[in-house]
Length: 427
Image (cartoon, rainbow, N blue to C red; front, top):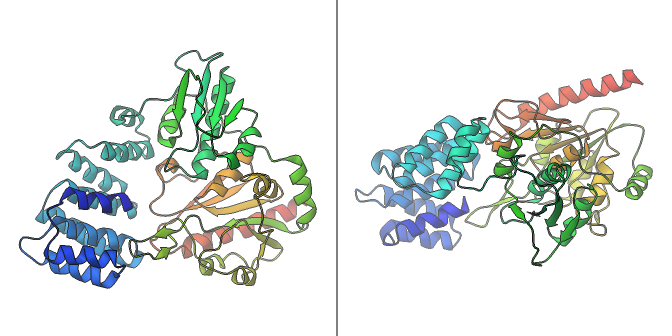
């Protein structure tokens, strides 16, 4: 989102006048209403600036209630000024609605104007989502990962985990690749942040971790890129067994702290917030508002624990009032990222999470995890499926509504009640 706001300015550098110039000035001043009004004035002109429509569509995408406006602006732009920017704007709008086929068609139209690498990346991910792997391989400009296609016995392979744009969840998912390499006889070196080093070492598949810019004489280097990894996995044996281990000492500590009587559920509902071009902090499509999450938290004989460490949109008092227990605020500060969280998750019966690093961690540990996906679900979760080849203990709940999780959470609640009853009968 932010990238294309910047790119559209660069695309038409001579367009800084009239309503468009006023809109840009208002945006820099964080004046949302002034910005929108100025851009609306611009698109009313006969000789309008294309970027004004693009901005109106992309600003509307920040707010679920304004999505119909985003669709209208993007579609009108393709009619009034059919160009690469117009069809890219339309593709992003369709993507936000989960209309992936329509998004693919719009992205293809953009390539008719100019063959752009970033657009090919978007199509690459779309084809992976639809399991059209041959099309994905054909359009990708990335170097393919090793996928059993040559002997790597005794070879040094460097995996770069901390690549820009890839968060903690991606790093935990990428860690699975080390197992494939190690089983094939490679010496595996990981480059990662210092705080990630302990969790990487727990796997037994990493021979060495470097945390700075130390030059290594690796035979092959692979940067963290989940799309490329996903393509490689189609050519490797399916391996969904747990691959992260919790520290036994930390496990013992948290086993003593947590209530062992009730059915224990860990909750994670807010990942990284979205910041608009006006400085607003929004929940984002993946996040769930605490008010909606309360649909779950009144089930008898179930204890809910917060796996959040940051509370952006609510206070800790509000969380506790929602029947969710808050754990030690200093979790993962002493032993490294995810180390204590992993030990906590191992004591739980279930984790319920939005699309987040916590969901990846639970899956990698082999703990049952129910993950809630928005309409605009990430390509790696494919389409329509309730299970995933990434983690054998993960169940996917797909929202069919924009801007609300109510129906999805009621479904989760019903399933949770049935699960608790089943466990109680098991004794």
